[in-house]
Length: 347
Image (cartoon, rainbow, N blue to C red; front, side):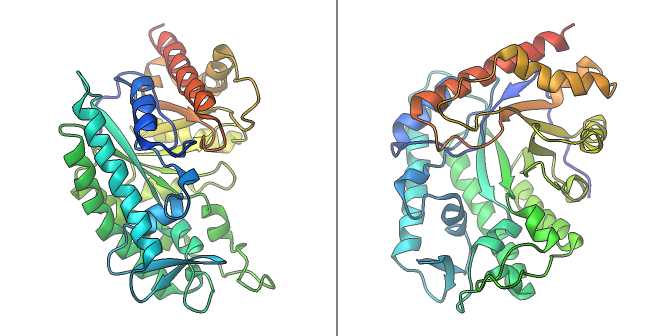
């Protein structure tokens, strides 16, 4: 399946991955949109500090159609009927969308693009549990139902976000943090004495394609799949029809860089996790060093500077462990890194 025809990227832009510190959606939305105004990509932040239902897994599970969930000591579980945990998750998301509408309504010139995040179908199946406490990933039928339910719910979610941000082009980031373990068969069973059987690679591609098509039909203009750098299945992601890949750069192999270069040459996007922010108390990398993290392999692979416009720069991970001021500083540094790369692109 081919990716959609993307708008001309034009220049390097900045965004972050979604998780954000604190519990105040109003202040968070103002900060994110203030720091990432056009041409950059503001996002609807996730605030896991608010508790149950505001974590990435619960937030995405609240979108499922005809599948209800609740929280048990071992995590989120698929249940027969909605309960208070699911209602809390849905309420938090509705609050965030309403806040977004209010903040955008008060802006003189709203940003042209907006990003939302979803937990992908494979990592969602790895994180949700069946009635018996086992992970839904163990059961093919459960995996299929979750993928179909998520595709159905994601479309209506995008429509709600689009109504809150009139005229904005909606970008979607599909998070698959567990994908290497899912494909390798290294996720433990509930007992811990064995591991779950690996999921076939083609099933992963098909699950992503189902979600990508639903998001495209709901109006998404750009869809990327975000994965860790270790054993990242770039070929599977691209075969699903996604427009690009989001990945940290810190441990990519030469072979992975070659795959990414091929994707860029084929017109796909690379969201480069170029800013290492692992320790909230650590000093942020210098702009020149972060620029070089991208530019050195780019140059070594023979990619022309003019193709840098295929990039968005991101932190290497989410910012929920930071303070709001530290997370804000990360956004500022990202826009500086994007500016530095744009200077190189201009020669």
